[in-house]
Amino acid sequence: MTVGTLDKPIELVQGTATPVAADRRVSFAYLGPVEWDNMGNISYGLWIHVAPGNDWRFEDIQVPGAVGLSLDDGITPLGVIRPPALAHAPYQPVASWGETAYFGVDLEMLKRMAASGKIGLDVKAGDSVVHFAAGSDAHETLTRYLHARGY
Image 1 (cartoon, rainbow, N blue to C red):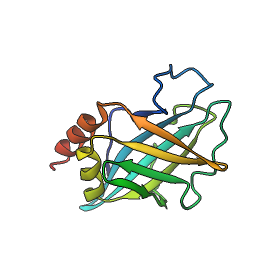
Image 2: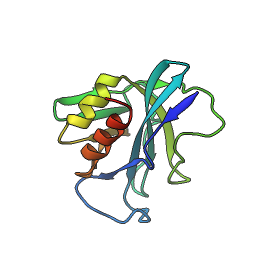
Image 3: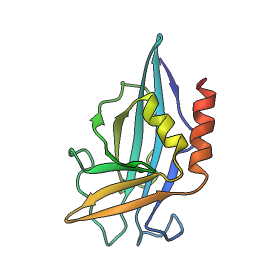
Image 4: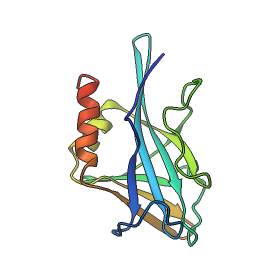
């Protein structure tokens, strides 16, 4: 099986601040597309890792409806998938206290993400929702990823 990933996952920052990643007072999220090619049978997923700051406690991100992908055309709830068993994970967790899960996406969703002017994640945290926003380079990163896959 071959696996296609980014060199490193895309960092999303809580709210509109631009804090330093080592600052545990704020929360971060990371996402990375994954392409699994099992002898021509291609499937896709979205690796997501959330690292809550000291003042947030997230729901279990694997609970249905806990994570939504926010693009220009609205929010899409994401559903957890079980990735293929591999010797090495496609991405490594960024924070030891964070939580990681894989979510199902298809090629069309990856194309929508690459075409979107904004990419965000909405993660449930008790009665609240924490919004994470990717930087302006996320669009270009995802576009390069798709071009490398032949799309």
